[in-house]
Image 1 (tube, rainbow, N blue to C red):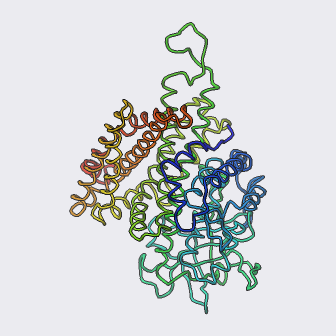
Image 2 (image 1 turned 90 degrees about the vertical axis):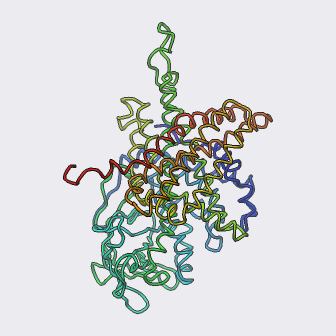
Image 3 (image 1 turned 30 degrees about the vertical axis):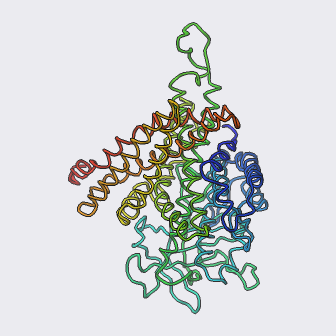
Length: 597
């Protein structure tokens, strides 16, 4: 397995030229975020990812976790690596300095998150879930709760979880049965939760669970769900740890991938009841949990990007090292590295272009999140919020599905050795496979996209997005080059396909919602490839200007243009077909009776 090397040059290009780091640095509270500071953070994170977390990726996968009598033991080296992580301040990178964070933008934190996930996806689950819990507690917790828990969670000394799923309630949270019985100024929690990432481990001395449960007077369905803070160990008034709470890990799951990430089954209240503290108001738990959910969905989209880049890096190394076959046109010549064969080159270009498209979209959305939270102008904040709401399900669904495809292509490039665990290529595919499932499957993201994000607002946010894409296509028309013209044609076709599909959804949704839902996943993929093409076209325009001016690394800019062209020809060209799949899916999807399957 190759050593992970963060692609800092491309990260910096995307942050500055596409995501607008300079604009983000002008937002209130970010005035001290200089290019030198950001470069220093990226370089430090790249070193840490390569030297500390990266080497544990394959060994952690092979060793896995040990569960015994409710306790989980992490693989060799993980505790020491995690302590280095928190001692270096990485966990609190973007959080409020009032609670010990460093107050850096989401955009910067996202680039660092990419490194953690690419170097060791299983390990990265711990800070990913903790950061979501921090966000929910920061926005909806009481002042006392914040003061008691946030300092330790921001530092990473305590981790956090989100507890939604129950055996009978997968994605349908209306079926939640866990109970919260009032007991003075606290509650006694009873119930079982499953699929709880890092629900039990030995990295830290406390775990803060955020748990969905129902009070005795709660109405039925999702309107009767409340959110509770349930620590593994109770916290004394002086901040020290008290007695063990009534929550136990009864087992951990044996999974296809991310073997070093403990996925726990937690039992609350086998005894007198786990002590929990209400967050916010009763019966608003689902609303609060969606703060964590959106944070997690964005983070999982980053995972799709990250594991794809790790698989790409390893595939490039294998293709350069593996000598097999003769070069085309030279049957009597020497055997050559497989990277010289056109089909291997096609696969590598597919991996490279998709990784770069995902990175661009992810970072642009991260900058939108910063603007949605920090911009001084109400209208600009609202516009950014609308953009984030629209793009989160696209980012989560498309980046994870694409990450799986890229990891699978990496196995293919390795050939038979890709199917052998020792090379490490298979691990990337196994690890990636969960990303399109947890935090809402691709189907759930697609239903959210067409239902809440297109139909609910009459397509206004989608029309605004399409207008931006069309603006880039027009700009390509003013850029005199064959590559720009090819990009313009593909991007214009993609924007038109997206517009046509949106029009059909708006016209059909009110009278035949099943027809719209049958084509929802193709529509999500259509949005993904068009948004990816939009960002790659923007990148090509910047690279072309830089190349003409002679400003910077010419090889990098020429590669950026060629990669954008490949994405347009190979991925963006699928947009018209995805439009047809969106519009015509229902006729056959629902055609068979259940007993015909």
